[in-house]
Image (cartoon, rainbow, N blue to C red; front, side, top):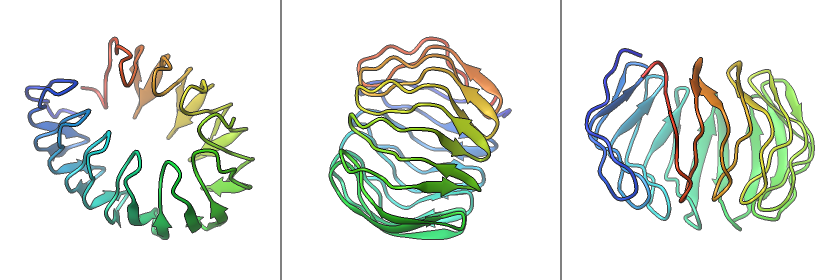
Length: 203
């Protein structure tokens, strides 16, 4: 969104200054490279990482998240869209009771733990799972997702904020066409899967 990214890298190469939607990112990294302060939608994120790198304070849509992690790293208290989540985990760590945009979640799990009926922003989710458990129809911000999976399970059509994603995967599963904030991404990958032409918010 008119914010130039500086020097960038991938897979152990430090990224320089980055911006998204007018919010300047400082040093950013990927795959074991520590991210510095990061912002999104006017909410400043603290230190972030990926693949075993601890995330610090993170916020989204004006709601501050506490300490977060990924791949066996415990998440602390989290909130989204003004709703505070309790203790949250990932990859075999049970989530407690959660609420999201006024829709109460019951006990929720991840990595082979089945989710019950869930909703988001007035869009009801069906039964969901992760790590080989197929998600049924899922919606986000009024945009219906198709079949979605994780960790070797191909994602179908997805949308975010009115932008339709194509086939999407994660962890060795090729991503198809994706879009974010009205900018279409080309083919992308993650964790050893090469990304093609990629755009983000007009950059």
